[in-house]
Each structure stands twice: as C-alpha cells, then as structure tokens.
Image (cartoon, rainbow, N blue to C red):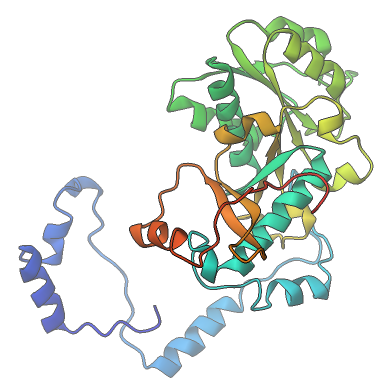
Length: 345
C-alpha cells in the first residue's frame, strides 16, 4: 500500500468498534517474553526523502556476474521476447482464475504451462501453484502416501539435501516416516543410488521411492531399474528432475515414473539470490484427483468457442461470488473439460 490515510481519530474509532482500548491489546495472546518492544524507527521524512532513501538502499543490491549457488539455482539467458509476451494484457488479466469469464488470459497461460510440463516430462497431467522444487517434491511424496495408503517414504541420499530437509518437515506433521537409501558416495564410489540398497529399503509400508536425476552429485541414476524395483513392492516412483536436462535425457514418463517433481528456475527464472522460484509437478492421469494445486482445463462455451476453466482446484475454496458466476448464463461451462496433456489440441 503506497499510502495509508488513517488518522489517530480513525484508529481510535476502529479500536472502539472492536472493543479494545489500544493496539497492544490486539496482541494480548502473544506471550510478553517474545513480544518486540522497541523499534529503531527513524524520524519522519517527506515523500521525496523516503523515495531517495529507498532508492539508495535498493542500489546496494548487486547480482554478481558469476554465481556459484548451484544445486538447483543456475544463471541462464532469458530472451527479451519472454518478458514481452508474459507482460501482455491478454495473459496478465487482473482477476482470480475462479471466474473464467474475466480471467481467460491467466487461465490460458496456466494451461499452456501445464501442457508444456507434460510434454517435457512425458507425463499425462501437470498442476500449477507449487512454491518451488523442494515443496513440489514433498507434495509428491505426500500424494504417493494418499494414493497407496502407506506411511513411509524412501528417498535416496543423493537427492539435494535441501529437498530432503523440506521433505522431513512436510512429513513430520502427518507423522509419515522418512527413510534414506544410502547412495554410493564414498571415495571411489559410483556416486549413484545402488539398486540393491533401494531394494532392501522397500517393503509393504513404503509409499514411494524418491530419486533425483541427475542426482545432487551430477550422476546419472539407473532410473528404469529403480522404478521397476519400487513397482515390484507396490510403491510409486517419484523422479526429481532438472528440467533442462530433459532435452537430452530420457523423459521420466518413459522410464516408469509415477510422479515427477522439478525446480523450474533453470527454465529462465532469475537467480534472485536463491529464490523464490517455481515448482513443477506432473503425474499419471489416474492420480490427478490427488494432485495438489490447480488444474486448468480447456472447454467450449455455450456458443462453441474455446475457453479455459479451473477443472480441479484441490484444497482451494473459491468465494461465493466465484461459485455463482461459474454457473450464470454466458459463463464458461465445463462441457467435455480437457486437462493439459501431451500433444496440444
């Protein structure tokens, strides 16, 4: 908010309306031992002075010409045409995707994004709205638990350690056990996930085996063999991939992956000092109702014109107005909705 017009009298009127005597009373439930008391706030400045100060502070940010972050964060050239296209008003519609009649641009861009993720990974359906690759991986593991009704996740120790930490956090809430499959990373080792080690970690409690390709050490894992082992024990196979590598490596859909998760930063998102980025997720069509996030589909309106709608919106609740608009005359209706899939229509 650029300007907050509330005067002291306005604040007192609002406090009186909700029945408290001061702003401090609004935070009475926060223990006194953890409440901040003193703030080093500088004296007030004019708007011009504030702008100059903020410009000075922003000028201290410097993105290095060479970055050695690695581990999922890479510097790539982003063609000028990309920013020009995504900034066009046809795609940057301003309203919530819940109301398709006023957000076709947003819905189309999500649909195209999901379709391209399917084409890249060789999978059948993709979702949007994942924070980054680590959270997409954790969501994939939880999705596997829901699909298999099992409570253990096996993950290779050659998966990015940051991803493994996020997975541990996600699984700690619902009480899902995470076990590590030790990769052969000792001196002179292959740097890969041994098939026999994966085999010994799999049993009737394991919902999925999570393996990264290429792995954290740059090794090319035997994904087809690891996927076959997981399936032999009734577990799903979750592939964590680097998206640009799929230009030359086999697509996860071809070697038996059930769910694919990836960090989308290498596709052209600026480094931004390490995040936030965008998570990618794709899966088989028979599991789409367990996918988190949004699934945008293509449909036809009452006049036969092509349009886009939120076919599935897992864990999200549109406002009452959104539900009403979706069924009003003239709004897009879900007649033969189509999810994003390989090969466009």
